[in-house]
Amino acid sequence: MARRQNITIKDVAERAGVSQMTVSRVLNYSSAVKPATRERVQLAIDELNYRPNVMARSLARRQSLLIGLLYHNASSAYLSELLVSTLKYSRELGHHLMIEDLPETDDGTFDSDLIISRLQNLGLDGIILPPLLSRNEGLVGVLSELNSRLVVLGQLEGAPQIARVSFDDRGSARAMTRYLIDRGHRRIGFVSGLKDCLAGKARKMGFDLALTDHDIPLNPDLCVEGDYTLRSGVRAAEKLLNMDEPPSAIFCCNDDMAAGVLVAAHRRGMSVPKDISVTGFDDTYISSITWPGFTTIRQPIAQMAELAMTFMSGGEFPQDDDITRLSDKHVQVNTVEIIERDSVADLT
Image (cartoon, rainbow, N blue to C red):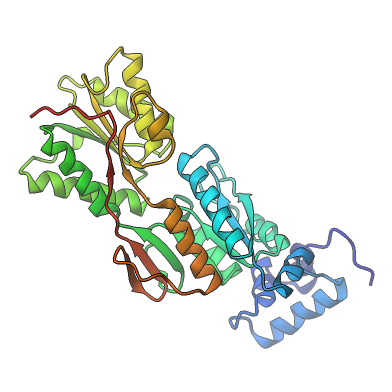
């Protein structure tokens, strides 16, 4: 049969009478497929003359990989820096990077069949999954079955078979909170991440630990949930600054939300840091271009991208005191570095 240009993995699945996931497993040589099912899928592939992405096959012959970096929030400053760094290291290793958007459904989940169809047709040799996307267990499960060369950036619960590169979120948040306390701040607002985000939970834990270290009572009214966007930082700041006794400082779980706090403060005619101190997390470009630039935790995004590409290529990890191999599949970066700018008042 002559091959049609639009033959997809969905066509193969329909011809074989199986799911797209099963076809994907056959294409990726998964041992989870029964021999009879594998034979039926292979027959459908032959009948339809289906072939995975030609470019990926040619790259493979040159021992070069086609890596997919997935995302769903293009406005994120973190994502911008991750993209640049991943592109740099993939080029150095002779690989090629493809960026793919995964839109969420209305209920905040992802369409598994659509993901399988899109990504399988791209013929990706590996997938990098950034934070926030990695909080979705269903998505991680689909991707791990679709592609054995999956690397997750950030915290991941369970699934020890999946490679991951994480950061010491708890220790870093604890250090930033201590930094504020050492400068006389005791009533500190905290803008957290999403409740189901493990990195956000770790940062909240670090915040709480630092307060407890200094005998400062935990006040849930001073903790507001955000979603890592600038707009959520504005909303959180409005809530905190409307309190009868507002905080003297606000610590945000990422730089985008900290920038949102600055927006809310400026709208009120407040001076930073004279009237309110603000800190962020990540040290993305946005932390240095706002007015004023704000103090933040430096997350080594470029280093984490390099480690992800090392996982992807099966290379040797560098001997570094700041890098801990928690398992064969888990590397954690332990660097704790506060980048001081002009957003924190010294009240001592």
